[in-house]
Length: 138
Image 1 (cartoon, helix red, strand yellow):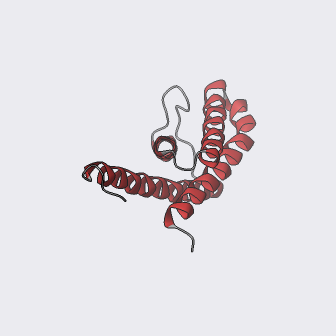
Image 2 (cartoon, helix red, strand yellow; image 1 turned 120 degrees about the vertical axis):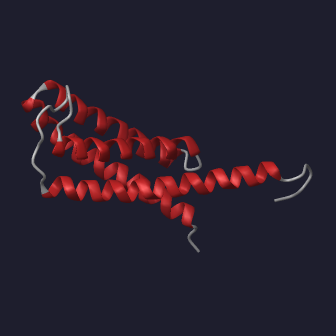
Image 3 (tube, one colour; image 1 turned 90 degrees about the vertical axis):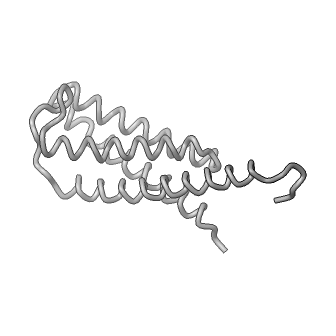
């Protein structure tokens, strides 16, 4: 039987990989708009790819799940700002909403939910393990 933690980990890894690929593919287009937006897309691709690798190699890393949640939530908030008010320094004018971006954000939201749920369950398990009396087997 497949454990929920394994499914959550796999979802976060796949989401980071998909989002990294999309951000990497869009980096040249955003570099043509200017260095700051291009740099933002390149940095996002780099961070997401790194997270996918770390989560693959260290599947029990609670800090990697926390980092994934932070990066994914940052991307979602950044996009919301980019399409409503713009992002100072990176993309000052609001950009139009498009289908690829919405699909990417839906995928990232799923990854964020999986990362947060996994992190919450892992912290609860660690707290429960630390609250057991010494010598108690788990």
